Image (cartoon, rainbow over all chains, first blue to last red; front, side, top):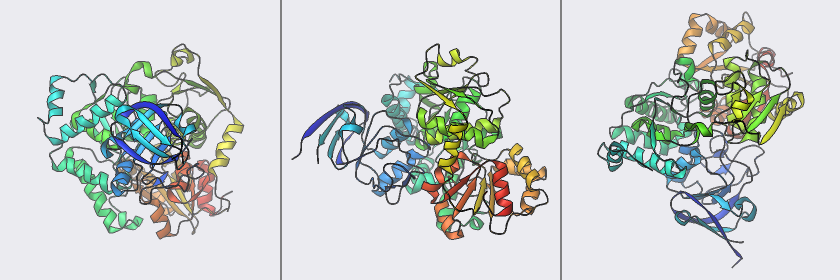
Length: 138
Length: 413
């Protein structure tokens, strides 16, 4: 087992989930930035371009772009191509609403900065109800 | 959150499943963002009106709300769908998608929406007043409604706008509260800007830095047009998630820089001049060849003034045989362009008028492959931003004159 890090945050959307981390230091848009059929990020020049989000705990600063993102997240989660949880610096409404109807947990206002301490492939347990993110380093 | 007695009954299911589910969404959203109560809204502009956005799951969600008796209690207009309802087969939309889109549009209509299919509802008389609370989706329309009109809306996604229309309420947080509407960044515009493309480049530069925060612009003259403000709104919400901006001396919450910033110092000072403009143009001009390919106007939707300008530059001319020209707008504006004679001029030049959709909301990646389009040429910053990732098409990005010239000659210069 690798080293464990506990990150404290704020519950945005209730629930618990676990998965491997995908980490972006740049904001993400789900419409125009991710292919819903495959779960792969398509935005040209994005640090996650070509990365598959399916089944992952997505760690990113915040959302941007289209307001179509809420349904897109719901469609991806329903298809099984969506992330299983969001860990964010700052929640915004579009991804939050997508997470509410998809019933996936969201935690924000995390300390220490999850985009710095979590790396791709780390195993992440998100307990949004208690605002705790447990990271096991890969 | 504090709920009224009526709202508690709504949440308990006394007014049916669609109202109950909508209350659950809004209470969860309100609690996420620390709202103390719900507030009543005057209108909704509905995103998630395209199957490209809603997907199969979202379409079924909207249909289930309608099937269970959902009725909109706020005035509601719809954002573009995935197709022109009068010529979708000619656009290259397949039967399955056409059928699903028809179902989705019908579900919104049956709940009481005006299914105008446009990202510029303010050109069709959906014009919220100053200070009015509304629940709008469509990132460009949100920024326009908040900033240019001074209405108050958060960035609503499809499900929250649907819930807002069904219960006539939204949680009181974010841009509904006066104290959250002050500017945080200041951008000094150091050069005269002209036309939607240059204002779009400004928005693109600032949106990337602002993310969710509110920028305040100085150096933009009072003569800035509605179309230029429309383009600025769209670009700020493409590279970032800007929902509100102020233009000192132009928009209603910015009589002075001090007022727009609430007397505080801006957290970030920016400037925009020839170097910043050139950097945006270089970033969005990804196509290396000189082919023109698929030439598109209308993101956000073409206004009647833009129709007039496009028609004037195409009068008596023919577009190049290798070029496909689309001009996208709402059907009422296209009807007006027809009665003014602009539509005939564009059609005689070889252009197509496309209603109720746009490349951002139609299955453009599939259409491009089916129709053999490889390059997209546009004057729209928002479309140039989304094109490479979403459509798989590299872009030529320039002003209307450059784009028309490319349409006529088949060459980008």
